[in-house]
Length: 389
Image 1 (cartoon, one colour):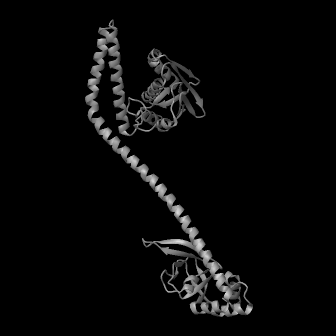
Image 2 (cartoon, helix red, strand yellow; image 1 turned 45 degrees about the horizontal axis):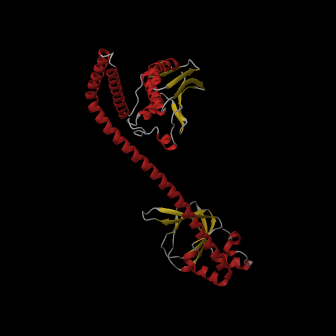
Image 3 (spheres, one colour; image 1 turned 60 degrees about the horizontal axis):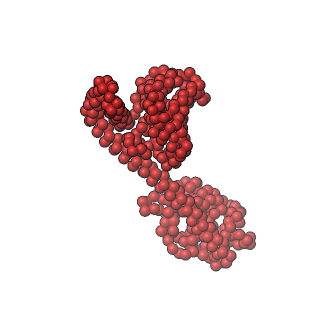
């Protein structure tokens, strides 16, 4: 580097501003050109300060060693910036490590030469003070940004940990349910079938006895409810929905299913209205789709206190078959609505809390999705989207 090039660099350096030409020549004589390769260490934290540096070309990193031995980046400096002046002035060990972030060319002023400059040019002290303030300010900003970044990372880690914990708890519950259900399902199934069969026989034998008819209806209904609960537990414990897929005329299937519940709903003063605007076929499991129907219609009926209406319609929407089930029952508040598909959650006095979770799983197993809209004291609407063939 020529004398003229050094002087030009000094003139561009903020702490040597407004000097006379002769002054620059004096500083140039004691400024030593020095080069480093990328990742070279210029000096380390706690070393004795012996020089002050001006960056001619390149970039350096100001690093602080953490408790784990890893370096933390405090700040960066580049062309025209200075570093190392603080330790030279206060004569304390270096407060940080300086590493070359790129290949580097520096002008080095040793400690004695630098001290003489401060005595000769008093205004340099002011410029150095400004440089130090700037360094501290930059370092503080870096620390704050780093803390904000770490806080966000901690928040994300906490949420991930919380989610993992919830999944582990859920897995433990499912494991326990799976073992329990698998052990008792066979032992329960046969007695329940026998109870239902005998109830049907008693109903036939005592068809003129209204009290017996009513009692047997209750027995059959409760056996069916228990069977359904056991099936829900078993399905959910398996952790997957296995589909037996065939082409399904959804409108025809829903029409048939409505016939099976119409009389029971009529006895509860509930009218069911069905409209279909498409004959499109879906590929799915008719038994599982039927379970979705019974779950949603049962919930709708439970939500209707005295009398009401359940509207069901099927239509096409883009690439989907849209199946809507809407009631004018008591509806749900925001809290219940937000948890409706959560396993084991129920706002009823009876049930496993798995019905809606299974409904969602069945629809998703069909590559579809489900939406729910509800308002307290107004009603609830489910929209089920199934892919068209």
